[in-house]
Image 1 (cartoon, one colour):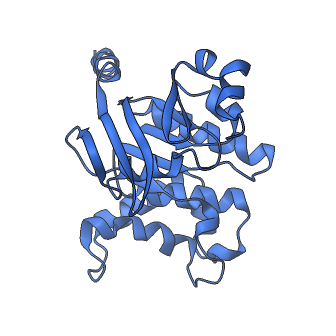
Image 2 (tube, rainbow, N blue to C red):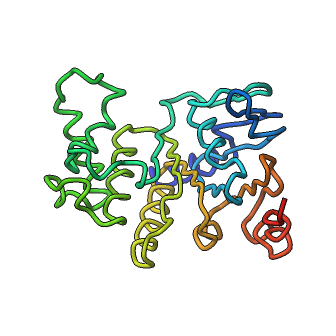
Length: 244
């Protein structure tokens, strides 16, 4: 009976948005980026943000994360903890003296503050996140010593340590070897199956085709939205990537 209730609850949640943007305009001082973007992010699904460089993917992730405000339009979020944002692994410097465990522990700062010691619950959450991403055996290694795939899993573990229901990722598989890309894809699919909503900005069309929904951006506008098979057609992609 519990499994049926759980499944029914997930099915109901999948019909509801966790974030809704309506006529959104956003960008930076003197540089508007997103124009009249209207979309829903459906709970308990995988959404892929696809588009050329400069199309607005990172800005849209920033809006979803709540760190870039809308200049006009509306942003609605369901109740719950703030989204967890996982940056590109290249955004974390190799020279920083961070261990793997220390990096994951940073995901708890929002819950306990920077200057408070870890509680038993914090340690349990960190352990669980590291186990889920299979980086527990790397706990004492320096972040700069890791391979690209290992580092990406550590950053995902940091996101999981925030215990948010919405995980936002910026290019999680770019530059990785095929085996690492497949491992990340399997990890993210498992998180969705277990009740996390995942949104990833990606240039990896294989990853995008495995998503539930694709959002295609071009020049700051939403030019495609729907199932990957409908959005990622040769014709639509050619129009999105056409020279300015």
